[in-house]
Image 1 (spheres, helix red, strand yellow):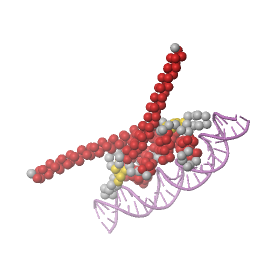
Image 2 (cartoon, protein in one colour):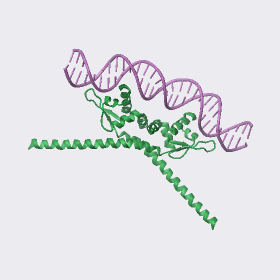
Image 3 (cartoon, helix red, strand yellow):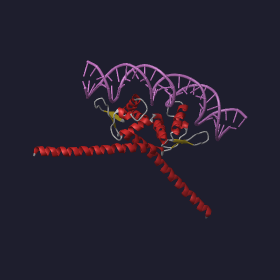
Image 4 (cartoon, chains in turn red, brown, yellow, orange):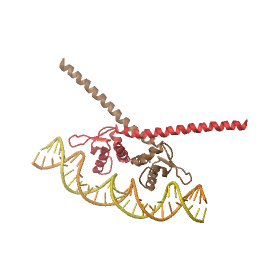
Length: 118
Length: 118
DNA sequence: GTCGTACTCAACTGATTGGTTGAACATGGA
DNA sequence: TCCATGTTCAACCAATCAGTTGAGTACGAC
């Protein structure tokens, strides 16, 4: 499901090399060789990383002679931010309510203090 | 570094069970037993999942008699959204510029057409 | 102290992952 | 057609991971 898609996206970005690839693709499309150049792992390893990003829907590939230019599909980010924001908001709302309850409790304590003092 | 922290957060959320735990914790603190109840895996397995979330800084645990109430630390989400938004914006900006270039190109083509037609 | 509850630790297992190397495939140029 | 370039495929290895079971620990109730 879309659930599984989210798992693949999070898993893909859990690796620093893959996050770096995404970061560099944000600046513009690049070939596998270009992408592999800065890392001291084999080209095949980078090719595998790109495959993972592709399976997660974060990257698509075209054709330019022998090259397979990689393109970042930034819309997939929406899937993550959607999930994250949902629960962040929920937690914040709960926190806000807790704050209100504590304020209420404080007010009642003040009343009691006043009654005790009076 | 903070880089590694991000890896742990993404990896923690790459598992559907752990995302579900986070979702349920967004509604309020829960004990390990409470959290484990809906899943048909062992309590120990859920305990391990919680440990992963804790190591990622997404969850903290208190003490309430025998219980270890789990609490969602929603601020960690900022770490992710910060990273995501940075590259999303960059990619969108690039897309915007590409759009401008294409529009420019279109305008020039129109001029050529006009010259050709004139 | 002993008992039950809530949970963690330890050891093991099978599956997945990130890396390797070497061979294969695809494409454009001589 | 042959060659070089760019990339993928296949087999393998070590490490990590999600799950298991069984034993151990922490705390409150009796």
